[in-house]
Amino acid sequence: MVHGTWVIGLAVIMVACKVSIGLAPISSIDYSKVHTMQIVDFQNHADYVYGPLATALNDQMKDLFMRQTRLSLVNTNGDIVIEGEITGYNQYNEAIDASGYSSKVRLTLTVKVSFTNNTNHDEDFENRTFSAFQTYDATQLLTAVQDQLIEVMVKDISEQIFNSTVANW
Image (tube, rainbow, N blue to C red):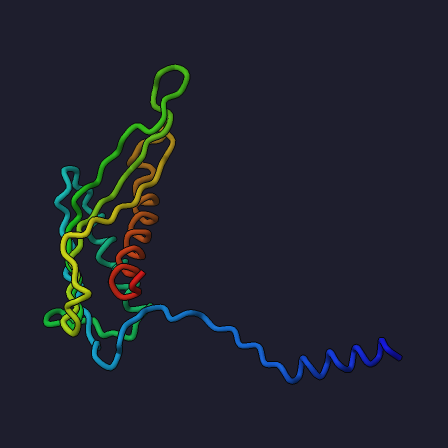
């Protein structure tokens, strides 16, 4: 009988309690003030220029902000403006094997970003640097792995920029 009472009590508690699970806000944008965003195309000013890199970064940035916010993308006079440039695209030997040759290579992407919130200039920043890297096996040619590595690094940097601008992380 005690067991039956316990089961009924548990059922009553479960019916009476409402569990609410939700996701945290994706951004901290005040949509009553901010309606538009302008993402100025990033130019590639790195010493080593890989043609598709700037396009990949620009497309990823615009896509991420469009998916994660309710802002309209405009070409001029945005309520928020993100602009910058690719300042570094470099590869370095990261590890040496027993024979003295490189075994791992680190590919690093660096961008410099300025952010302007025309509705709240306290959030503005200029020339903040963001970077991401990927490591690949030195037996591979960069040309064989470059597009895959760029995809990961561009996604990482875009998320860093998103978090530093509209997510306020």
